[in-house]
Amino acid sequence: MSNPVLHTGCTEGLCLGKAIHMAKRRSWGALRQLPHNKRWQASYPGPDGFRHNAPDTFSTKKEGDVFLSRTRTQIADGLWVDPKAPVVSDAVPQFMDFAIEHLRKQANHKGEALRPSTKSVYMRQLKLHCAHFAETPVNQITKSQIDTLYTTLREQGKKTTASKVYKLIRAIFNRAVSYGYVSKSPCSIAGANTLTSNKKVFVPTMSQVWDIANEMAPNFRMMVIMAAYGGFRFGEVTELRRSDLTLVTDDSGQYYKVSVSRAVTLVNGSFVIGKPKSAKSIRQVDISSEITDELTNYLDYSVGSEADALLFPRTGSGTLLDDHLRHDVFAKHWTRTLKRLKLDQEGLTFHSLRHFAGTYFHEAGATIPELMAWLGDSSITAVSRYLHDTGKANLIANKMPVPKKLRVVA
Figure (tube, one colour):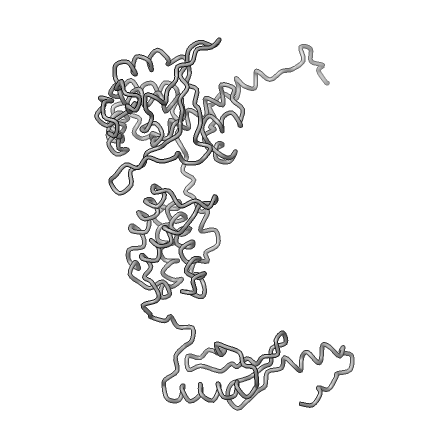
């Protein structure tokens, strides 16, 4: 090949590069030499109206010519297959089968396997929202299908659900890409992972907490008080046992210290006892001495004498060691109580008691680190969700120190 002609005003390297990168035009298709490895790349117009590159590069220009000739013959004979089209093969798993395998292999940020309760939540999301393409091979699921799923949930007002489902599907397809089942993930909506409904959390007042507690059955009454003055999650408080409570006596009086080291979750109809939500959730919780007498009375008359006896079992007798209270069973009593108190329109849930606990523990003087340790949260962002305005800004402002004598500036 003759040397390229150098243009006036151009650097020699630039013009030489243009010549080398120039595609070698033919009567049909094109060839160009790649600058980084000197191999040849072939491209051609497909019958679908798009230009396609050969799946591989060639060491010589002649090999590229042979490929283009064969491809042109295949198109003429109607035997051409789009190299980017999904390949239907037994080697490519169906979406749900692959999703289950993904959950089995997936690890958290510490490299640990997902907890059974987490897997159960993910499986419920998949069955509820992805059933229509559960048996579709992963390489045949389109971006349009994923976008439609996300948009439908969002338009239904289920913004948080839409975000969680999309984040899960994206993780599944990221694994599919890494395994070579798909070349590119169909999940590419910007911001879809972080969409939230921004629903306002209703925090009950102190009088409302006690009205609810006093209106419920004795075992549920104590459970509401414990949650409000200990900040326990439902799975934590329903796994508390007699041996988890220690009565402490010091200069401040007598109070109970509660050890939180386990939580119970209902997974596929069976209770699974495991660790709490995070490592920080394993903690010691001090309970106000104001309820010591009532809690002692409850332990004496409503909880079994065994060290492993549950504090709040389903039966209310406290004698069965594995008779855990289901959330839906408690929710029925909770809902009826709220209706009787005409609080059912306020959006109160059992988790609202944890918000009450965090807000008033902080108002009582706890620092952010103390609140994080007490509630068992691992970050300031997480614990800040439990801090709410109590409507006492004026009272607090009046406690701000000012000089006894103020100089009035005219």
